[in-house]
Image 1 (cartoon, one colour):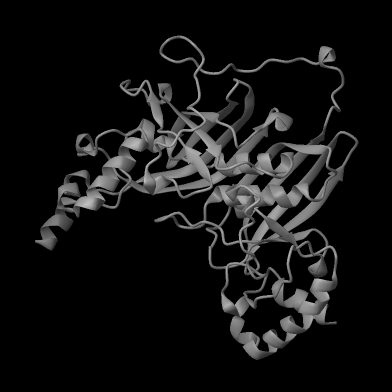
Image 2 (cartoon, helix red, strand yellow; image 1 turned 45 degrees about the vertical axis):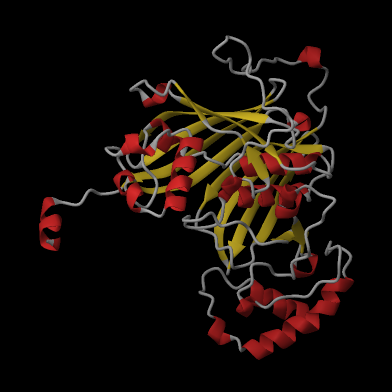
Length: 406
């Protein structure tokens, strides 16, 4: 009975609004604490240490107490860990740790929701199945201060393919949804019976395939070396052409440390980083200003802030901000959908250098589309990704509004 009450309190009817005032805090505390022993006793609730439920009224970022980071795992494995909540229903998972909210963003980093949804879906298929495609929609901005519940639906289980849909919810509202297709390893037969081709590794200025940074690369700015992924400076190709669709951006990335888990952890990590700088490609190829102040106002800022702004602008391939005084300013840029095709899921090694190359075939009507290719350091095309997002410029103040302020 307690479990039924708990389930009803956490999963209200989607057609009704959640109102915390309807349930007294003390009653919910009593209910949840009574269920702790039940949950800890269930072997399908996979946790590595005794757990304590947190009430929704506490506004905590996780439903269960966050465990300390596991030092035997890479940082990205700790970031993307999900916990199964079988006591609440079949195929329900939650984030184990607080997701990252990028400074200035409307919500949490989209790549973390993609990757955790993939991790939850993977837990419901056999180990010899790996993801080959993932079609996602960002519906609402996610909060880093609330738990996320991942509901997995088993759509189909075949001999060669399995399909899952995953909904990520906060406070009963769906913030993200994805349909994931998995393929069984070696189900396509002998290589001689397959039709195969792949785009090659891009060439450098010398006409040879690009070479990754050294394994001991440590030139990343201090401001950017705190996340679970390490990256090299973004390079804009054909940056002097007036045709945005002819430009490309390239960046080498890899997960920090060594991923200790299985192949699924590498795929989760690739899904996570696939959202990095993605829709922002539109801003780079059009040279749009993205900071909350104009380039000409930089000299008025504190010296340490000026230094950071100049460093970030150059690191992202935009060059000297003093040369962007006449450039349009981004008013709104958010992702709408995201698709990943994993071409070689069993060859992904996310803790080794990977090259992403991005380009945009089109933007207009307040939206933009970006295509991304991800290569392994040996030139294997690991994945192709596509993303569409809202891209709006900030409205210029009218002459009348300027005069009224004077």
